[in-house]
Image (tube, rainbow, N blue to C red):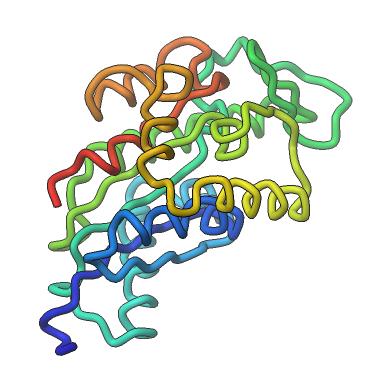
Length: 230
């Protein structure tokens, strides 16, 4: 295949469990494209105190790594799909409580944290960055969209709120991938169901996430990955 004929679909995901859970599904559905997953091993919307001014350049740096690794050009990319966890960052400040806990703990109606100030700083910073990214249509010349899982992927896929170990995430993700292997339409039906799909069009799903305590509750807008023009 000549370089000019490549049609690359790039997924930016936070951890290897994301790729393990949905990688096979995406490659089956988008079989006409070259699907690449870039695992960034963390949340680039909060890592190293990234700012709204620098987030697009940070994503572009990740894109350049993929281009360098595989010899791609910008013209080879169909679009960039960025998956992120909501981490409950849109909840009202007064719903963040001081507690004797090791890290942030999430509930349907609150967060508990060892440092309210640090958690609020994180929430505010990530909110601003997510607002910018959901309004961003392109990285350079490449179509881009960001999609969320609330609070995280495990919450959406399995309806469980606990903080899983990496080993538990791997086991759950492998089981999920096996469950939907060869059944991509069933996955789309699941991810589009009222049980998990946020209401409204793409931008409205983000407005939904910004309301009240919704960013702590089970919801995703990943169903729009399958509704974009291809």
